[in-house]
View 1 (tube, rainbow, N blue to C red):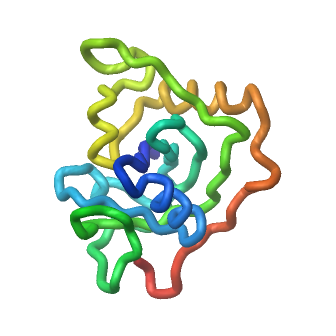
View 2: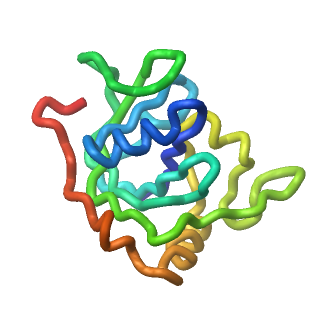
Length: 154
Protein backbone atom coordinates (compact mmCIF):
# COMPACT_ATOMS: atom_id res chain seq x y z
CA UNK A 1 0.00 0.00 0.00
CA UNK A 2 1.33 3.39 -1.01
CA UNK A 3 0.58 6.64 0.75
CA UNK A 4 -0.21 9.82 -1.16
CA UNK A 5 -0.91 13.51 -0.67
CA UNK A 6 -3.79 15.01 -2.66
CA UNK A 7 -3.01 18.72 -2.65
CA UNK A 8 -5.66 21.36 -3.22
CA UNK A 9 -3.68 24.43 -4.28
CA UNK A 10 -4.16 27.56 -6.36
CA UNK A 11 -7.14 29.85 -6.82
CA UNK A 12 -9.72 27.05 -6.78
CA UNK A 13 -8.28 25.13 -3.83
CA UNK A 14 -11.27 25.49 -1.48
CA UNK A 15 -13.80 24.83 -4.26
CA UNK A 16 -11.95 21.71 -5.41
CA UNK A 17 -11.60 20.42 -1.84
CA UNK A 18 -15.36 20.81 -1.24
CA UNK A 19 -16.04 19.14 -4.60
CA UNK A 20 -13.81 16.18 -3.70
CA UNK A 21 -15.53 15.75 -0.32
CA UNK A 22 -18.95 15.86 -1.97
CA UNK A 23 -18.29 13.68 -5.02
CA UNK A 24 -15.22 11.60 -4.20
CA UNK A 25 -13.49 12.89 -7.37
CA UNK A 26 -9.94 14.24 -7.34
CA UNK A 27 -8.30 15.66 -10.47
CA UNK A 28 -4.88 16.87 -11.56
CA UNK A 29 -4.05 19.11 -14.48
CA UNK A 30 -0.50 17.89 -15.03
CA UNK A 31 0.61 14.70 -16.75
CA UNK A 32 3.78 14.86 -14.66
CA UNK A 33 2.29 13.70 -11.35
CA UNK A 34 2.49 10.06 -10.20
CA UNK A 35 -1.34 9.76 -10.06
CA UNK A 36 -1.27 6.82 -12.50
CA UNK A 37 0.70 4.81 -9.92
CA UNK A 38 -2.11 4.97 -7.34
CA UNK A 39 -4.11 1.81 -6.74
CA UNK A 40 -7.39 1.08 -4.96
CA UNK A 41 -6.70 0.59 -1.25
CA UNK A 42 -3.86 3.12 -1.13
CA UNK A 43 -4.20 5.74 1.60
CA UNK A 44 -4.17 9.49 1.07
CA UNK A 45 -3.93 12.71 3.02
CA UNK A 46 -5.79 15.76 1.75
CA UNK A 47 -3.79 18.97 1.90
CA UNK A 48 -5.52 22.35 1.59
CA UNK A 49 -3.28 25.32 0.75
CA UNK A 50 -3.18 27.89 3.52
CA UNK A 51 -4.42 25.39 6.13
CA UNK A 52 -2.39 22.17 6.04
CA UNK A 53 -3.47 18.54 6.08
CA UNK A 54 -7.24 18.52 6.60
CA UNK A 55 -8.41 14.93 6.03
CA UNK A 56 -7.50 11.37 5.18
CA UNK A 57 -9.07 9.13 2.56
CA UNK A 58 -8.76 5.84 0.72
CA UNK A 59 -8.11 5.59 -3.02
CA UNK A 60 -10.98 3.58 -4.54
CA UNK A 61 -10.13 3.66 -8.26
CA UNK A 62 -7.15 3.79 -10.54
CA UNK A 63 -6.44 7.03 -12.36
CA UNK A 64 -8.20 7.66 -15.64
CA UNK A 65 -8.66 10.44 -18.14
CA UNK A 66 -11.90 12.41 -17.89
CA UNK A 67 -14.62 11.29 -20.26
CA UNK A 68 -17.21 13.85 -19.19
CA UNK A 69 -17.19 17.55 -18.33
CA UNK A 70 -15.30 17.84 -15.07
CA UNK A 71 -16.29 20.42 -12.47
CA UNK A 72 -12.82 21.44 -11.31
CA UNK A 73 -11.60 24.99 -10.77
CA UNK A 74 -8.33 25.39 -12.67
CA UNK A 75 -6.91 27.34 -15.57
CA UNK A 76 -5.93 24.10 -17.30
CA UNK A 77 -8.44 21.29 -17.87
CA UNK A 78 -7.89 18.16 -15.77
CA UNK A 79 -5.82 15.44 -17.42
CA UNK A 80 -6.26 12.59 -14.92
CA UNK A 81 -8.46 11.85 -11.94
CA UNK A 82 -9.32 9.14 -9.48
CA UNK A 83 -12.00 8.36 -6.94
CA UNK A 84 -11.51 8.55 -3.19
CA UNK A 85 -13.72 7.34 -0.38
CA UNK A 86 -13.88 7.02 3.40
CA UNK A 87 -12.97 10.70 3.68
CA UNK A 88 -12.38 11.60 7.32
CA UNK A 89 -11.99 15.29 8.10
CA UNK A 90 -9.60 16.24 10.91
CA UNK A 91 -10.92 18.36 13.80
CA UNK A 92 -8.20 20.88 13.00
CA UNK A 93 -5.67 21.17 10.19
CA UNK A 94 -2.20 19.75 10.71
CA UNK A 95 0.55 22.03 9.43
CA UNK A 96 4.32 21.74 9.25
CA UNK A 97 7.24 24.14 8.98
CA UNK A 98 9.43 23.26 6.02
CA UNK A 99 13.21 23.73 6.01
CA UNK A 100 14.58 26.46 3.74
CA UNK A 101 16.46 23.85 1.69
CA UNK A 102 15.64 20.26 0.82
CA UNK A 103 12.72 18.04 1.69
CA UNK A 104 10.97 17.95 5.04
CA UNK A 105 12.81 15.43 7.25
CA UNK A 106 9.64 13.55 8.24
CA UNK A 107 7.24 14.13 5.33
CA UNK A 108 9.91 13.41 2.74
CA UNK A 109 9.02 16.09 0.19
CA UNK A 110 9.78 19.72 -0.60
CA UNK A 111 6.86 22.17 -0.27
CA UNK A 112 7.07 22.98 -4.00
CA UNK A 113 6.02 19.37 -4.70
CA UNK A 114 2.54 20.27 -3.44
CA UNK A 115 1.99 22.46 -6.50
CA UNK A 116 1.71 19.35 -8.68
CA UNK A 117 -1.40 18.27 -6.78
CA UNK A 118 -0.50 14.62 -6.23
CA UNK A 119 2.63 13.23 -4.59
CA UNK A 120 3.99 10.37 -2.54
CA UNK A 121 4.55 10.76 1.20
CA UNK A 122 6.74 8.58 3.38
CA UNK A 123 5.09 6.08 5.70
CA UNK A 124 6.70 7.88 8.62
CA UNK A 125 5.32 11.22 7.40
CA UNK A 126 1.84 9.80 6.84
CA UNK A 127 1.77 8.30 10.34
CA UNK A 128 3.09 11.54 11.85
CA UNK A 129 0.25 13.55 10.29
CA UNK A 130 -2.32 11.05 11.60
CA UNK A 131 -0.76 11.16 15.08
CA UNK A 132 -0.95 14.94 15.16
CA UNK A 133 -4.53 14.85 13.84
CA UNK A 134 -5.48 12.31 16.50
CA UNK A 135 -4.32 14.70 19.21
CA UNK A 136 -7.78 16.17 18.61
CA UNK A 137 -10.71 14.14 17.39
CA UNK A 138 -12.35 13.78 14.03
CA UNK A 139 -14.78 16.58 13.30
CA UNK A 140 -18.13 14.99 14.13
CA UNK A 141 -19.97 17.63 12.10
CA UNK A 142 -18.00 16.65 9.01
CA UNK A 143 -17.92 13.00 10.01
CA UNK A 144 -16.71 10.16 7.89
CA UNK A 145 -17.88 10.52 4.33
CA UNK A 146 -18.98 7.28 2.68
CA UNK A 147 -17.20 6.07 -0.39
CA UNK A 148 -18.36 8.34 -3.20
CA UNK A 149 -17.70 6.43 -6.39
CA UNK A 150 -19.81 7.64 -9.31
CA UNK A 151 -21.70 4.85 -11.07
CA UNK A 152 -19.79 5.49 -14.28
CA UNK A 153 -16.43 6.05 -12.61
CA UNK A 154 -14.84 9.41 -13.20
